[in-house]
Image 1: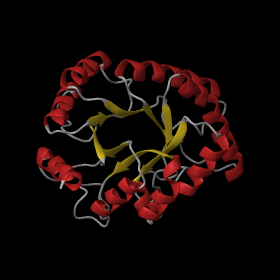
Image 2: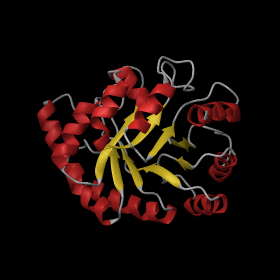
Image 3: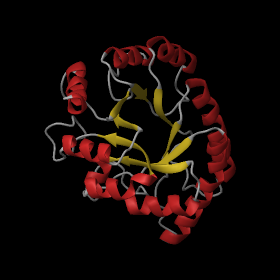
Image 4: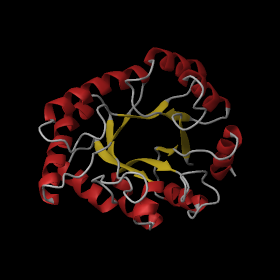
Length: 254
């Protein structure tokens, strides 16, 4: 059965993070996730997660949008070690990594070699700490103009070359619908490389119902692969927040 995780960055934005965690738990979701950790009160979040019995499904590595940067390997390793420390505090096992934007003065292959080298440099930190680093392709047509990693096959190529069991892909079904569609075929073909999913409706990055993706069918396809990780809800609600999240939950419960 699909396990939904709520990205608390996108919901109840006027509330403290610990209150958002409480609301996720009250709605019956099995996990929550968030983006960067540097602007968070981690002890308060840990206490809230423990009190409400809800784990952290995923969090972002700091620095973000950084694996493409030139002469940045040492900073990335340091950042991964710091992120691993925070992840251990929270009991989080999945770390989201964003790559960064294209350099116009170099070829694709030049960039690719550096990105692979940088990911390979931080992979041992993930391995040593029992973490999975998931690299995320994003869309460049609507939200992230200039971003380098955009397609699943491109991400699979990188993961294969790095060759670490601790490096996988975050397949964001919003971004990938915009960039290439073919969601069910791609997730089925690449499931062994996928360590996390994100969801949102297209167009608009809103609820999972009413857009151009059939999330009931997508969830059935994910389930059929035997995937046992989390599927994150990362969208901006247009409905009242609790009702919006209940609607998403109904897609996997009914």
